[in-house]
Length: 418
Image (cartoon, rainbow, N blue to C red; front, side, top):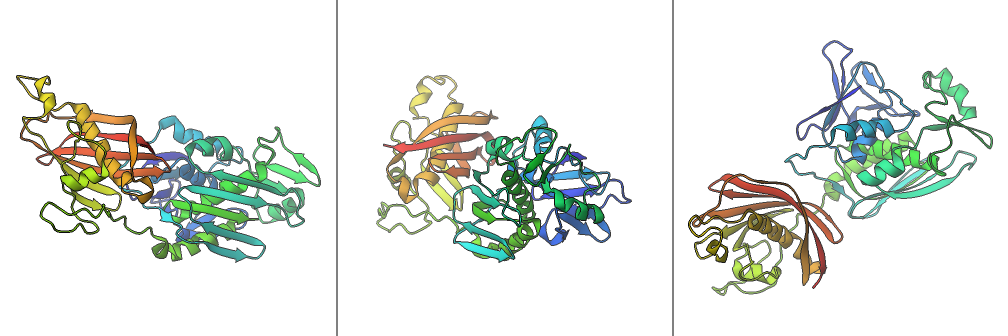
């Protein structure tokens, strides 16, 4: 098996390089053909079995686009967990892409029941999964609740191995489902004994593997999910039915467009400010606490969802030109970065609960300065808020002059009380 990079909007695709024409199957719920003990994708006569552990590794690490090449009908089982797949991805690292991620945001409680399995979802600003697992006799009942992000995924979920009960093995062998199964890649439960070649990796390893499977099956939605998922005795069949239900509700669950409602302060010409209006300098200063000589935004020209465009007119009267440089005035690159941070701050500070707070600069990554900015230039600042969790915000910004990128970077900041 090999993992290959893919352009935006590709999603996760499996490619059978052992078959003529190297057919591909997209990891989408529409392509699920079997959910007995594992999740199988199919298209025509082509099948790929047990895709959930690979898919879970991608989602756990935040990967949206990749191609998985296989020379067989099933990924290598490894040790029955997603640990090795996670290490494969981490060994090469991830590359940010320009397209915006559009999660399915749970806006209201929803629920679904199938037999003895129950799955519900509630509004939450990240992805959290709470799960209860048990066999039909209620043995080895376990519960875990984990917020899924790359750190918790690697540490708390990815190492959890496949498990099964001894009395199920004979049936599985007859169905040809575990021909490669052994104690090297699964944990077997026999009565009150746990059979394994190494100690359990977690005291609640079984329910953590259930969470792993659910993360993998939810990848078949084709979009990340933002919400708190609560699952009781989930199975691949239930997981996939839940994904189908989420897909059917995706339009209804789509987050509303973020419109900007600045304080109702009139413009200089007396016209009132309406939702989504362009912000002039007076209205900018009702949101940002910055003032001369450190206000790097003159006007906001567009706010659309989590994207914002603003303008800074660079004049010869800027105070920093006195020393940078007297005979060759150039706008310092760090101030362009500050402009990006201020524009990003507008998107965070516009929320009613953040009114009156201060945005503290925490870090800057992937910063590049490409061309000097001089007096007379109009600096156009485009920013996309890529993450907003509690008090922490992260944004990707670019500065343009005459349509050409002059600087760019990713900024992280924290909101604190003034």
